[in-house]
Each structure stands twice: as C-alpha cells, then as structure tokens.
Length: 67
Image 1: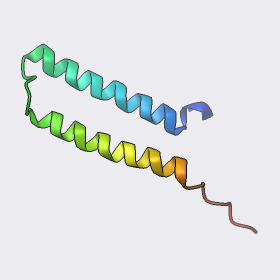
Image 2 (image 1 turned 90 degrees about the vertical axis):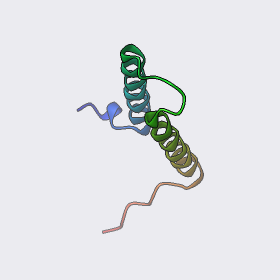
Image 3 (image 1 turned 180 degrees about the vertical axis):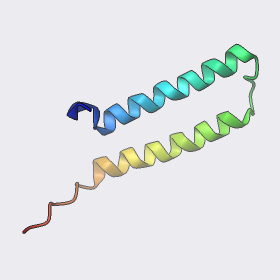
Image 4 (image 1 turned 120 degrees about the vertical axis):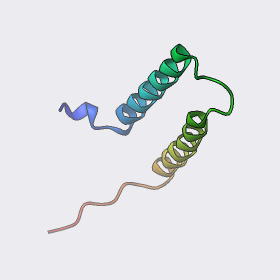
C-alpha cells in the first residue's frame, strides 16, 4: 500500500465515501426516512470522528523511544 494512503486524511475520506454509499443504498431501496437506525449510527460515528480529529490537532504525536 502506498505510504500516502496510510494517513488520517485518507482514512477520513474513505469513511465518508463508505457512509455515502450506505445512504445511497438506503435511498435506492426506499428505506431512507428520518429516524432510520443507520442515521443514528452515522451521527454517533460523526461525533467520534470529530472528537478524534480535534484530539489529533490538539495533542502532539508521541515521541519515538530512544535506543
């Protein structure tokens, strides 16, 4: 796998693409309506993703251990 694909940005874009696909399938099958359980799971995921994004921007990455 290319090194540039092992980033948080690539992970985030991939997740958003998958969620868009899930909602597209839901809309195509006619099961898309307010209160649908997938929407609640998506909102929970957004909260977790947002908190992880904030944490990554506030806290520095760990320092490599010395030898």
